[in-house]
Length: 74
Image (cartoon, rainbow, N blue to C red; front, side, top):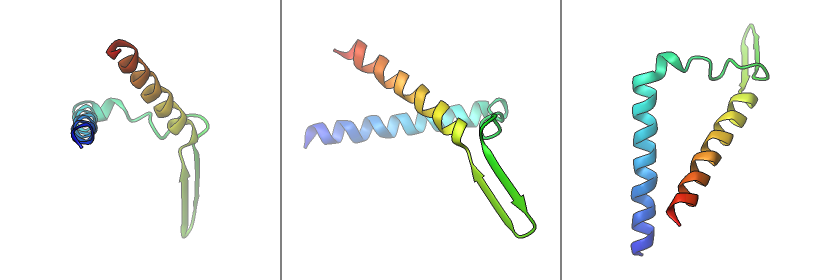
């Protein structure tokens, strides 16, 4: 149970850190969601937005960060 508590606190800290980064640097992150490969379809009464490239980029960055944390932790 103690391990679960630590995990929840760590996940919460990561979410807070991400929120602070977005709050402070949000105007510099406008390219996210507008990268080549992100699909945007706009019709008269219909909009679809599928940020494929942005999702891949965020996934790679998060995987790299978690890999670095794991490598230096143990």
